[in-house]
Length: 634
Image 1 (cartoon, rainbow, N blue to C red):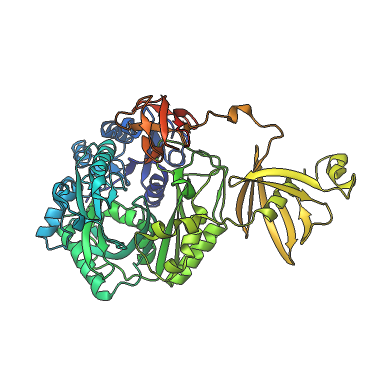
Image 2 (image 1 turned 180 degrees about the vertical axis):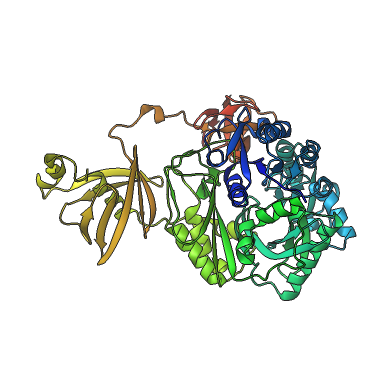
């Protein structure tokens, strides 16, 4: 038995905070590492000690295993937990941790290495009798093989993945997937397999000790995904026949035993519409969605990881599961704008209800450009699936999140969608329903009125003349405020006494109470600089005051392509130079920001007249990237 005393977490954000929580409960000292942008991040503030990793980019900081081991030794840590992402599935890093005399909180390096390449992992699983999809050689693919799914052999998180439905696009998609995989994982190997339409992503959590015991801790469904990254996960996977659950559990245990696995891991499967399971990959680490399994089995998987690493034996069988758990990933992103990540100050983050919230942020923190835009994981557990889904949707709908556009409304609508409520889950959910889920925002008029009233109410401590000035002079004349919200402009005209269909019951700068068509409603208002945030049971709205005079700097040359977010130019279309003819919708540039790649498309057919960036160049939000002169209409 090893007796751990101090734990370094080689990660950041919510997972580092979550691991520290368990470490403290077990009496361990905690050590954080941080990049320069993360110097004041929550995980740093939360740790007993913190060590700087000089730089900003992951390649210079959280991916520098040598610096992390040096930090652990300097801070007196005797164990390293990798979290997920970054170096968590790097066998060489695990070996270096062990060689430095530290305890590695994870599976043996040989097990990590065996599963690191998806192509090698499939060979091992075939030998172990785990069901697999047959690979397809892209060089000999025919129309009968379509659609195909291209996948990076190394890494995960949706990087290097492409769905191919047209053979004419296969080479271009192969090149793009390989380039993205090489950029993300340092390995450009890509393979192809059949793409299963309306398949389900179902996985099995496993936990193994060093004494030969392997637990299969139930199933999880992670089918609701955007860009091949999970958005909503739940346990157990709903609607699976008991025979299929047994098949998945047996296959997962066989996969673990095939590589002499130890610690926590996840075996992922694709389940076809007719119930046939196929092995996808094994994640040799803790999963982002592990809290739903913890809730259902009433376990702390991080605590069990630590105990297994110390040499403790698991009981022969896991506890029995109870109830249902659902997790939603709250991202700082705009689903209606191609999932565009958002950066900036987070003024408010408050989520009500009896839900679990794992987050790496508090109010006042800044979401930067270098890392994943996930703000929090919100988890609800209840006796039934319907109750858990309802509790999670209600908590998210009542959340107050100010400063950044998020996917909160998408999550609420997804949870309340008839297909999801009925357990009809598959990976094409957002392909079918995204427009519906992101459109038709609630009428902002009552919220706009609340914003205007709160803005005009300076509070009880203001001088009498100020408090009464707008309410006594020319009482019959309405007051006017103009705002923009969700890309549209609204003008609010209100009267201090009369408003058609609405009675003003009470106003303060922070709370406005209105009676709307006979229903009393409260609107919470928060102002920050030029932005006003209004939250109520009718939804959340952000209003920006319209300036009296437009800013001439807002005007740009027609055809200008501006950076939609700060990031790095990772690719420029082959042969693209000033004077090159382009067609509408043609990808011209690829911009990487917050672990996601975004294509910059030609806005119209014409000629590229200017190109202001090159591969590897970092750009700020709104930077001029290129200019396309539209060809004259015939």
